[in-house]
Amino acid sequence: MKPVLFEEVVLAKDFPDKKLKKGDIATVVEHHPVSDGEDGYTLEVFNALGDTITVITVAESAIDPLTENDVLTVRSMVAA
Image (cartoon, rainbow, N blue to C red; front, top):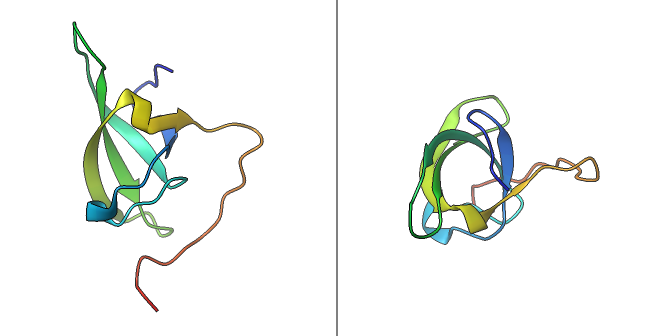
């Protein structure tokens, strides 16, 4: 997978330090090519109202493309 800038992607793993979970959607805002290893991507994560929650840099293996079979859902980041 080689996402392009401003493409939406889905997290392929949890990032507990950022309170992000596998399946959360993020937007690619920067590509970090690596000549000998795995490329990285800076992602911006938004809430349902479009406000930025966090920015995170991850390895390419930590993201997947969105597909036509994906269904969007809502979850709260606040513990009940």
